[in-house]
Image 1 (cartoon, rainbow, N blue to C red):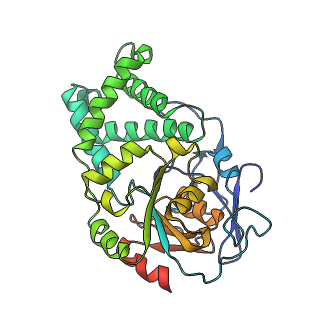
Image 2: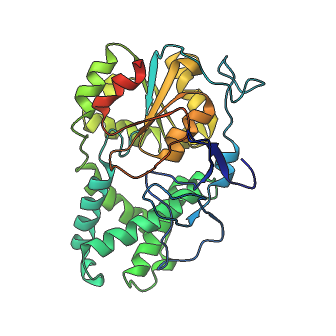
Length: 322
């Protein structure tokens, strides 16, 4: 990486600079909220075939380094793992196992309707889009260590209510912002649902692999979510989250922590997630097997070498053994 850009060489041999993404969404589009000072631009078409500017998570990516064959950063960094057998699998949660996007959308519409705010927007889609853009911006700030998890929630509430025309929203107290967010979260928690392929796939994989979770959220929140959709028992205590760990994906250290919880070397573990950068590229740079779960069929013409792409968790066993 140079000057905050992530440089990878794809299978065609052509270098590519990848935009920085997080939380399963492409960051940016905050034309209604604020301008962001730092952007990273791709040098080839992005995941949807279009060029877009996005806020850079540069410091996070700088923390990511490949591993040597022993599973620790060192002189062997960048070496291919070879054909070592995969014995463990780490999973992202949101939009990988749990349909976070759908639950968040339904929860927001329910909450703003209950709060008599839906009329402030042209339609529900506009409200959801604005909330999502605000979430992406402030969550990226949290991932970069600029704010705490709680503070980014408060900022999201204040910015959203400002967009809804609520007088004095930017002066809202932390207590009032917490109350508003908690009401939204209650709507979301009651709407959690696992993807149809999650439970049967995890059940089959659990018979052959050690399973764990690596998430950019908090442990209590993700354990509650996994319990709600009936998946927590497959992972036990093998759950590592950015809030408690102190670093977020794509930083290599959080992947190392996940491997340690499985009791396996880095080269024996694969990571599966829906974010191309934070999950797939992050895992690859850390020395793990990298599997990008591209549920939405985004167009990335030339994934980086060593990253396997699947459309469903049903496809995972094949890429782990071929």
